[in-house]
Length: 118
Image 1 (cartoon, helix red, strand yellow):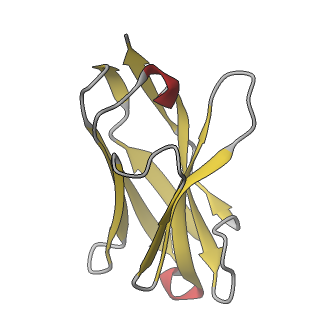
Image 2 (cartoon, rainbow, N blue to C red):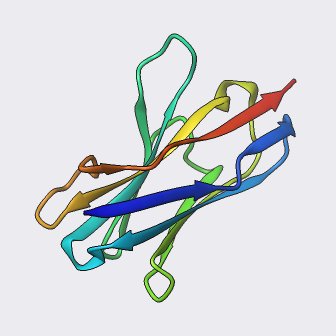
């Protein structure tokens, strides 16, 4: 099993920045792809950023504003969010995928709330 713990959410004004962290523990060797999803009230959960090996992918809605990175020594993945917009508001979930999976969705964190005020 793999445990994921997110931190770094909060309330920020539009145009501001936040950095989310996700610390992984447990059977780290069993996972490869990691990513961040978000879910706004009344909407489906969507994948906003993923990292697998040296490759990163970002949703079109966050390109140019968000960056995903990973520190393997700390077993931690980060989501740097700049130029935040009210539509970025939601619960952000860290996720990890087993080796061989392209989309990280085998293990989930508990979520951290991000609220962007206008």
